[in-house]
Amino acid sequence: MQEEHYIKLFELAQLNLFLGSVVYCMGAVYQVFAILVLNKDRRISRIVGIVLLTRICAFLSSYMIWILLFQNTDVMAGPILLPALVAEVPLSILLLKVFRYKAICKSL
Image (cartoon, rainbow, N blue to C red; front, side, top):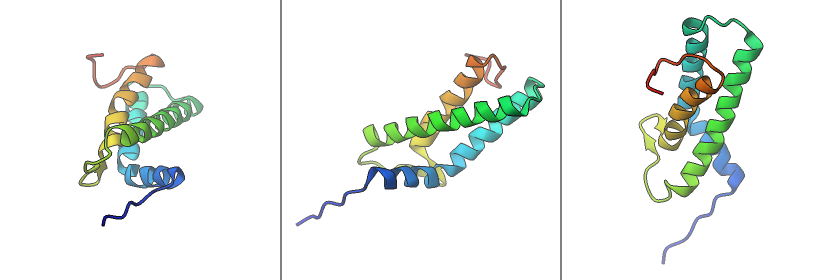
C-alpha cells in the first residue's frame, strides 16, 4: 500500500526559494548588468525596486508553475529549478521593457 505525503504551502514556498536561489541570483545579476552597463542608469533606489519587483513576480510565477505544471516530473536540472527558470527569463526581460530599459535581448 502506498502512503501519500502532503506538504504545506509555506514549506513549498521555502523549498521554492531555496532551490530557485541560483536562478533568482542569476536573474538579479542580469538585470543589474542591463541597467548599469547598457542603460547607464545609476539611481540605486530604482535599480533595487525593479530587481525586487522582478524577484517577487518571478517567485509567485514559479510557485504557480510548480503547482500547476510540474506535479509528477523532476523539477531540477542540476542546480537549476526549472519552474523558476521558466518564470524568471521572460519576466526579467519583460519588466526591463516595461520600465523602458534596453535589454540584452533585442527581439522583444
